[in-house]
Image (cartoon, rainbow, N blue to C red; front, side, top):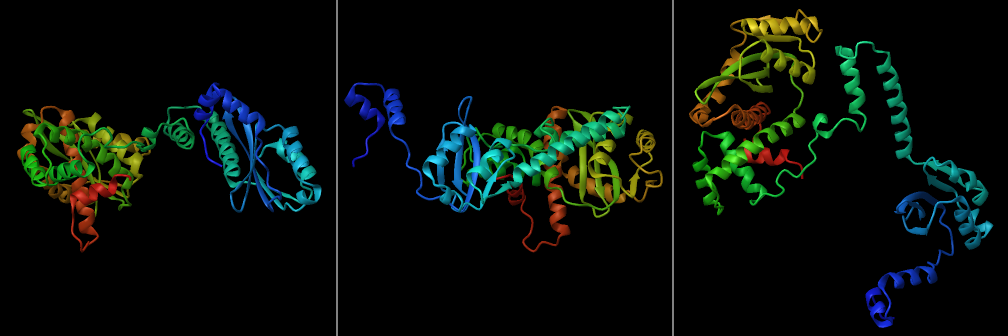
Length: 400
């Protein structure tokens, strides 16, 4: 038999393709299997809005047994009773389904020897909904919704529900290089070398030209400003465990002739915990940075800072709010040498700081520089024999 399309049939007979489809649906019925598998799966799916259809498949081979136009009990019972004898239906041992009570009512009538198996997905879904109800009840018992306990409980509830956006979860679901005129590898090479070494945008253009890629230096600049914050977010997702002894300090960054302040935090091994560029070195900046750090990474056993008054005031406020224990804070001039030495990597790029025209571009660029520095320190700490490659590290962070 030669295959022919519905459009060809319509042109031969002089009717529309929709009429051809309707006639075929009314007159051709799929022939059911002449036997029933030992294990079956029942489910419903939306076929045509708002109609729900019924599907039955072999649980072992995943081959389709039948698809019915609706999921009504009478329709399902009629199909199995008309096409299979009671002896054939008695051979069915297991039927996997969801928690639809309508199916459970007639299963033992149609299949006398079958056991009902609830699939794991719906069991987990039921437990999740029960936990959400318990969380909501616990939230309603908290009087002060703006307290630390109230805010933390609400965030924990939102984290396990669909209310919290992917951005707040720290999940970025997107193709980072979609719509770009250049290949992903070329962009990663450009920003990787820029963040790793003290190179200008025109230096990066020359490197790419040697690879057969012709690009303008302003395009490289846009890549740097765009992908710096993205790589910071990806780095935060891949960040591993650290010690509970932290060092906090600020580095001076020149932005268009004015000093701005890069708040930085590392652990006792020198690994980077967090960083943030602020316009002012005051109580609000120190409090915001420290609170975010403590909320994200937990309570340290030791927190070493300098003796700057704004920082000390922020630490005392966090102690009152129970973010930090009183015995954890240490204020020493010499114990902070570790992070003072770590500032050198950022200060090596000061030759480029004159190009910082505003704090937004400065923050984006420094985000990429800090991420590469953090990855390099981690590789050196792990004593990797392969060596460090900024491009390879960035490629590894980008989801496939």
